[in-house]
Length: 374
Image (cartoon, rainbow, N blue to C red):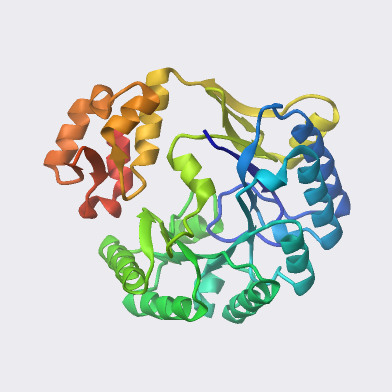
């Protein structure tokens, strides 16, 4: 089975209004230096038989690191990972933090896929989201990536943003088509507790998106992308032929991966564990010779199989029942037979040619299905 490596770079220039991923604004250069020191120590302890076929550097904003810091990050990777065996090497980037210099370095170090956090091409919506870039920055970042020869580029889009409607989604789709992205990830805005956007919502300054309008935006996006050569292969992901994200497919198939960096999660040899979501604790622990475990659990075989079922159903092709049983030792019906039958009766799951998948109706409300199956 293929393995994947995730590296969490926890730094951002500023925190977006909706974001609840772990990130900090670096106080000074030492924050990033100590992070890289700790990351190097953590990677020295990675299992000797761990040989990732995909590497994903996310955050945070990895491109907040300056060129020297990026060079050190890549040297740490080269010291502990055989990058020549890596098929897909992804780095996340935000518009406004890409330059010709750091993009040339990224390409030189073997990164062959960049995921750009555009979110929208509407400047007013970008302000609401607290994004630190403009629509013009997206265009410039895209030009820089093309000039550097990065041929596998993904764009993040966001829908269900308060105050937007069909016209907004259509305008974003048209701008997306102009850029000719190889891959698109589209996520519904979620107002998470503790974020500035949640405070605005609680204070009555904004209203949550009406579900019918949000569904209309999702359906419009799906139809538009299908009409323009993109395959909808996972609930939130679309690609041109051959540009599906290999790393994320590892997650969706129940594969094994190791995450390094504060808040990063791992699934290795039947054990799930994570690092603490605190940069100071992360760096101090590794520098002191201890491991900053955030959580740790070992799933029973049936629990692991059930989790794999739910994750696999995120893919539009669903689950081939016989293959699933061969891989996990359990049939889906053995795990959740009553729930599956009820969801089929409700029109949310379908079984066809021995393949279990979400129905069209269920794609937008997939979390409802998954809650029944966990």
